[in-house]
Image (cartoon, rainbow, N blue to C red):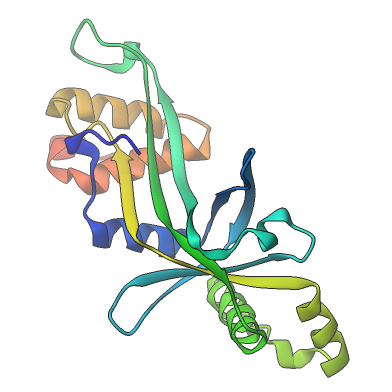
Length: 216
């Protein structure tokens, strides 16, 4: 991933972003062309702290046959994004751009054992059920043993050991305070939820740029 220095988050921030997002596009090379699937995932770590990404695919998914334990895969995780008009800047001679958050995780992937797959599936559902609190979390013990076994046979669990962490949080960090605040304000006025989220992130990153705003 090409990341100019002003937009580069540290490793911990990139992993934290990916973990919080929990959804990305997994990409692998089959020898002739790239194969990709959008998938939910959860992060874990080896005993030495090396991060890992856990997910599963349908048994017929071509990715299931490519997890050889040595060939690097890519997990691309995207956050909100928004178009910025050049007209929104205070300074002249600006150009349009696009603001966004993205993280790329790279490393070899291998197939999980049956026991590892069962744990992975439960951990994954538990992660996202937490998003729905105070709803009582769904758990796999609500399924019959036969149905759960059939579902496990229909999928292949995969773990990717993360060797490279790359991130780009492009939020106009290199712009002047006046330009930064002007763009954030205009993004916040847009009906698009992505633009509103980018505006909020910009305000969190540089609150001093908005200290002079008039409260209404």
